[in-house]
Image 1 (cartoon, one colour):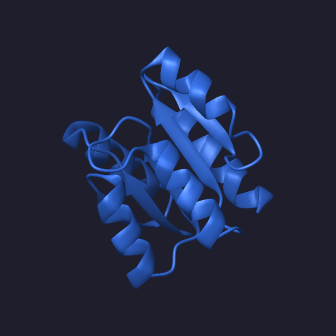
Image 2 (image 1 turned 180 degrees about the vertical axis):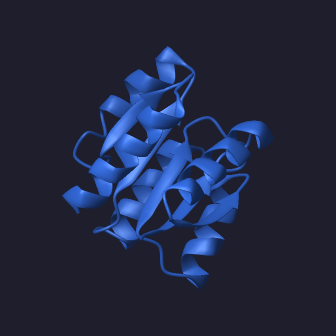
Image 3 (image 1 turned 90 degrees about the vertical axis):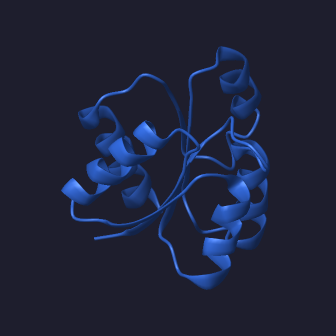
Length: 120
C-alpha cells in the first residue's frame, strides 16, 4: 500500500482522514499545516499528498505548488469546504488530481485516493 501525507488543520477531520486511509492499508503521517507538511516531505518518502486548502502558516494551494515543483511525480488531492477556494484550486488542474468538497464520506475519499494512486 501507499505512504500518505495528510495536511489538515481541523483535528477531527485529520483523525477521520487518517483512519480512513489506514482502513485501506495505507501508512499515514498527519500534520496540522503546510509548513509541517513540507518538513515531513523533506524527512520522508510519500506516495500521495492529501491536503486541506485553508490552513494556517502555508495554505494547501501554496503547498501544492511547492510539492509539484519539488516532487513532481507525487499525486496531490486537495479538500476544502469553501466554494471560493475550490475555484482557486481549479486553476491548478494540471498539478492536482482532484479537489474534493467537504463534507465527504469514507467511500468517496477512499475512492479518490485510490484513483490518484493508480493514475501516478
